[in-house]
Structure formats: C-alpha cells, structure tokens
Length: 88
Image (tube, rainbow, N blue to C red; front, top):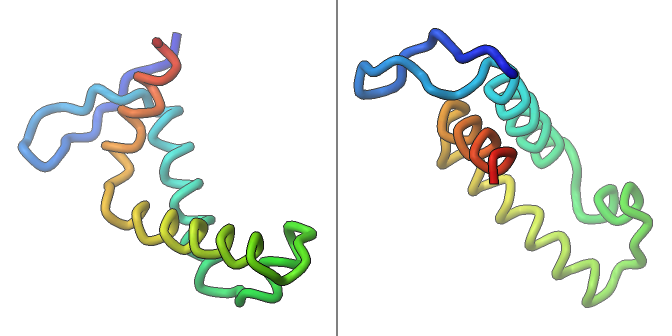
C-alpha cells in the first residue's frame, strides 16, 4: 500500500493522493513540458523513429496537445487520477 500524502490542495483539504503517485505525476508532467520546450518536429520524429509525413504530423499534434493539457492539471489532480486508475 502506498503512503498517503500530507500536502494540502487548493481548497485547504489534506491530499488524498499517494506520495508515490504525486511524484510520478510531477516527474511526468515536468519531463513532457521540458521535452516539448526543447524539441522541434524533426527531433520528435527522430526520437520516435517516424518518417516525416501525415502520420508523424498527426502524432506531433497529439504530443503538443498532451503537453498543453498537462499544464492545465496540478500534480495533485494527476496523482489522484493515477491512484484511481490503479484501483479500477
């Protein structure tokens, strides 16, 4: 069983997300954001071994949407989703 966090969320209630899930969420969101900031389309294709074209264009758009969407959630919310996914 994972340890529950002792961080408080935006409404002043104690976190219900596990510490492990919060760390995963923070690391994932940060890494995706950094990767998005540092790479362009061609580096993205190279890393994923994609030939530039329609499919690669679509994947790059999805990646950019992912990176932007992750900025709309705080680590606590992402961690709660991770915990819930493990329980289902």
